[in-house]
Length: 65
Image (cartoon, rainbow, N blue to C red):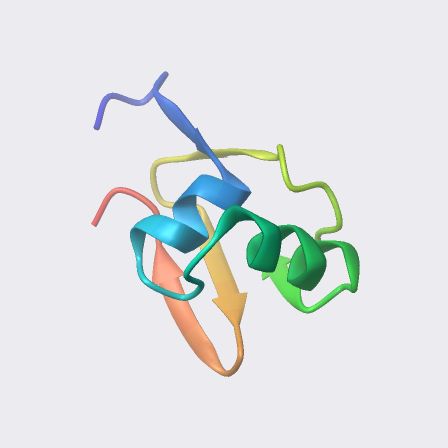
């Protein structure tokens, strides 16, 4: 992953298997159940870049790893 490449938050959650569908991701994100770099993120289209840290349901994921 190049430093200028990004993935949207909802797509990332599907990619890592945290959710099964985009609709599920949308609801969880909008309900404030996902943190990006330690802060609650409610925008499902939030652009994630390499080394961003996503927290969901007690699990941590690092973008680009």
